[in-house]
Image (cartoon, rainbow, N blue to C red):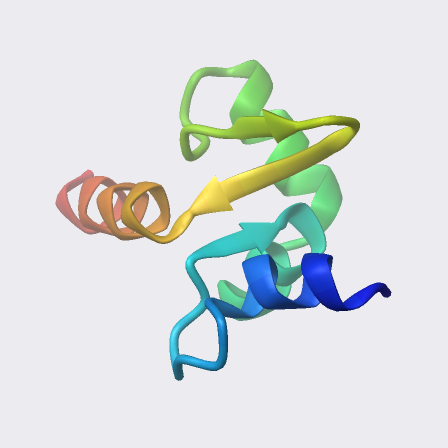
Length: 72
């Protein structure tokens, strides 16, 4: 991984990342990639953004998704 990607994904050295890759999001939330994509298909997944070919989930989107899952 090049340093620019690492900086964005890790939030420039902060404890919490600014954005998660799909793999990082799944690992952090203990879900499989298959479940992530099922939830995306069904409209229950977090909001994603595209950066070139990469799919990222902003920290705020992950937080919003967790709140929605807790309320469900």
